[in-house]
Length: 340
Image (cartoon, rainbow, N blue to C red; front, side):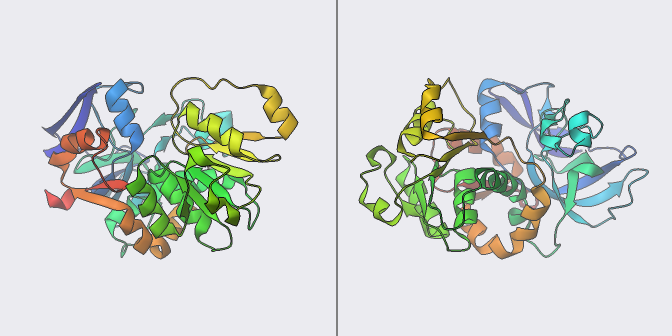
């Protein structure tokens, strides 16, 4: 038996004793979960039930683990390997997958929804969804590979030229990680905005970004360092924020959308035509997970500053409530399985 946090229905998350996974099927790998992160989409699914396709299901799609058994045909992993999980449960057979576009798989689901996830002492996944990481890496850092891949995908989709300033709205995990990635070379001004002042200040301190008041733009005096702002990322999902960003961007700009949205954007398409504004959607990630894993070692000192809490598996339901209430001061809550 093992402990697992399972979502039974919207608003119903239980930490339970459940049977451990059996021997993995051909092509699958059994893992001892080392650490997992709580994502905003976990909270959204808990609140709304929007993506519940099977219940109960072990939640959690941001996690790292140790290989403890492999199924027939698995040759790329050995016992003891440390790995991170791909959150996208893609089939590998549809036209999109054959084209390498796994985030557009015709049968796409997400780990923790269509199959059991990482909020458990053990879990199983297809070998195709695993990427090996350095065994010396802190599991809490390894568990941040998935959101780092999402942020990297958004940065790549934005495609801001070298030196061009970028405004990021929303200083949650994805916004904070995007700020960290964009500011790494130190060659561009990065501006961040969030109604949670403490969170915005944390992201600014870790990444070197400048905090701005989105409502005050373009008159904010901080913008003297970033004239002609043309590139922005929305990591809030707020249609009001998106509309404000479209007002702020100069002609020839790009707005990348990565937040989970609620409501509809009232948009005059002439605004896009006359000012040549590009709206770019960012869905999960494409091939960014392996590059994100390769960055973890260098980014570890900064990533550790984004971790607000490290909890045991039994504390997950309380952590959900705390995060939903906005009572967490940092960006990421990590579940360490060895905490018991």
